[in-house]
Length: 328
Image 1 (cartoon, one colour):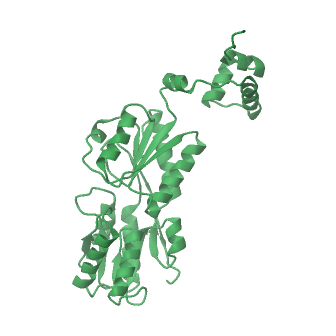
Image 2 (tube, rainbow, N blue to C red):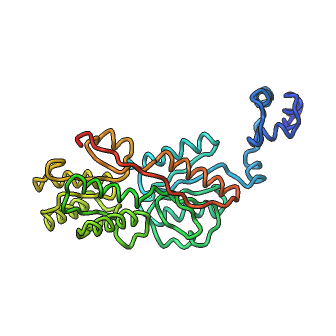
Image 3 (cartoon, rainbow, N blue to C red):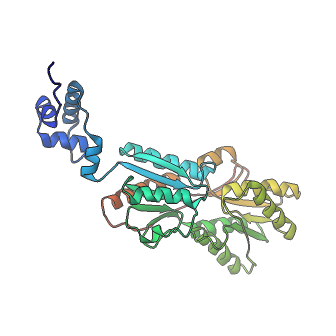
């Protein structure tokens, strides 16, 4: 019985009428090649039933074409849309994506970080809120953060949180609010959200008003968040304006406000933050600061690929805009 011939790169090149270098460039998507040349190579591969050794190519190139995303949860419209936008962009570029919703579990995040450190993925995009993971401070591997500070050497993609805070508070002031309260993450969580609170405080002081912020952890239950908001309305029945740190909290505040006979927009004004598409569809009555989620995803992917190619990358801040409610 004749031994089955092993199809090699040379065989593909000969059948396609091109050089081995051209076949290699097609396989690795390197350099400019005409659509006609690419088709000839792929047709030859199909005819010969040639399948490149993916593992060998990865070892040679030291690339897996696999990236990992670590975020808090997909149950939040902002993170769900952001992860979807990231995955869509990586897919177009030929990268596969591992997605991890950490639920703020440091162990889960460390597992994905180990994949990167062990060269099992090419890069990592993080957006969870775990702190104190020492590997982030030491590694020089490709990592991009979104709306989170994880290490001095790790670039961050964020919206213009300070400008967003100014837009939100100014809108409440323009609506005639006299007693404006802000909700935000606990002060021990270092994140760009701090700039939203700083803008709130600066504008309140400018208008000779006392800033009051209630801390709400992102990863506690809705019941716990509602408890905080009930306390807020109980302690400050005079509150007529709320700048919420995200849209889900804004929606909860509107619901809790009704229990205290406070209704939007008659005697209570609420401005949220995020502006994800699904939120705008389901809650068009919510005034919010919209983060440019598609643009943030594009920038994060661009930055990570530059880091993978060992290029220098700087943090990026993208503009936000105020989205008026349909009842405004």
